[in-house]
Length: 452
Image (cartoon, rainbow, N blue to C red; front, side):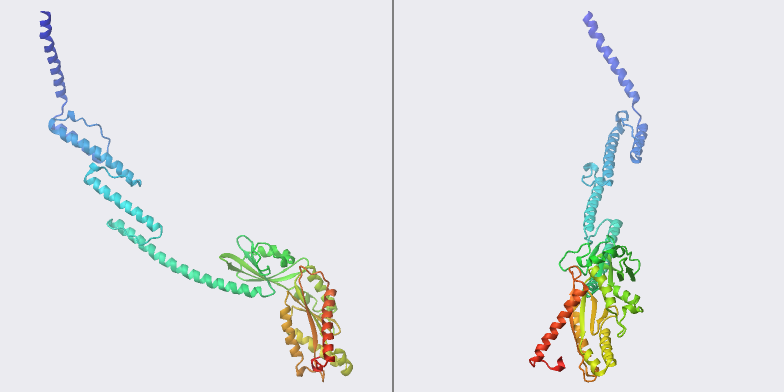
């Protein structure tokens, strides 16, 4: 009886509980109209990007559940597409768009391919290939093509300007080289100073083959005291002529101007030693430094001048001149005629040299000419011209043939150890050797008196 009771009553109780649950569940399902409204709101949230609560399709009425599941799938796709476009906007072109996106994914794939093409072509443009064109991207293509077209025009203009600049640079460099070549052959001292580093990048007195450096070359050591003034020249003036005097008495005239030197902004200084010129000017009216008969410098002036030159170890060239026939003319025709003969010789020599060169009378018919630098070849050429002019027929004094002899000594300041007296002795001995040789030739009948 007990089992029967149990068997009769338990199923009955279970059926009652199940029925109660189904009734409660049925009571929560939304009617069709509310389900549609709920799905509409859900779709609006998807479109506007608002916060989206989970969608429980079990609460929807039976006809709306399939639509609800479709909207859930669409929401997931929208999130994937949104994530993909965010990465795309950030420059990540490595991934494909979601495959289940259909038309939406197709458009994004086309956009990604266009951006890839743009990136590749922009890279080629950055490397200098301005022939690139971007088709099938509408206004973006027009803007890209306009940019590359402008860049090609700018490139053409720049290339033309570069060619003109290179042509100008070649001309300037050729003129500079010509200027340097001309100055290297002169006695003037030329320095090229880098405006940025204040280094000496060229000196025309430097020995050929020695590497350029900021130091002065050996032959310019005596000019070191003027180095700061030259290096500090600011180059604000396009062209300046100025003078600089040392404490020890040396005086220089400097021509300075900016120059482009081997593609480096520089300035050039052309330095002329005008110590003798200044000394001549200072003593122009001082009788103790002048020879009364000829008006040129005397032995005292030469000693002071050469004392300074030798102390400063400058390179100079000494020309010793021995005028022949003065004593004979004085004896035969009188002192007045002899003085005219002497003055004629002095004037011819002075006409052939610069006023800044030192020309002095040592004694009687002995003279000395001093030029800065080692210019023996120049003096030899000048002396031949002077001798030819002095011996013309219209320069005869009565029947006397005008003549003089000379010897030239180049003094290298850096290695010279001889005094002025010793230099003059050597020069005079060279002239005496010439006279002895001519005397031997005359005695042998190989030399006419006209050539004496």
